[in-house]
Length: 307
Image (cartoon, rainbow, N blue to C red; front, side, top):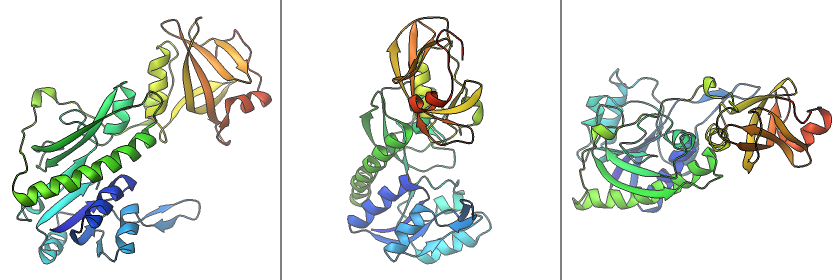
């Protein structure tokens, strides 16, 4: 099938590669404009752009989608189907109406749960035990189109957002190939989403970062896992703000926020609900990411005191 692909981050690369490996004709790729990164602020291509160029696929990076330029490019490319995966832009109706077989989207949640920008993070933040990938017909409203296919996977107890993202990306690529085959055969489903079951997954912000040790340790462990790599959970350790990257739930009780242990095993802090959180890896402001045990060698943290 002649397909126009739209995507930007690493998550989308798995879908693009799956389509290429399945033998589909990728007539072009739309991705976000290159952005300056690192100290030199050098313009860097998106992961999807790098993949497309490596396979000799034409790349388009429109700044706007509503001025007619992108629509003209799409009409010239004449795709039968548009596939979108984490593109980061809302497609106007005239683009949705352009390909004869429609537009489909690879979304990293079990819709109608977690519509929006950060479904993987919110699934972990909320302590969900499973998630998955949905492929849907696209509609003008955000992630509201009819469902074609879904696949579910368990969320591992210590799995972080980047780790789950990588797994869902591969799952999404496999499911996408099956779904495109159904569309090509005319057997693809159209299952309307239940609007009464809709939940949202808004963009993350730094206001989510501070750990509140009055909450149960499991809730804080989920917060740490769900906010990696950004904005990251934070706590003050010996008066220094630290990003928290690796934790473990343990038995323990005490006044929430009280240090129960500080040594070779890291930092153990009492939490709400007669639970405790072991901080195993952290990064102090202005410093490097390190084992908390190494951090404690140079910073005094007294057992029995509150963080």
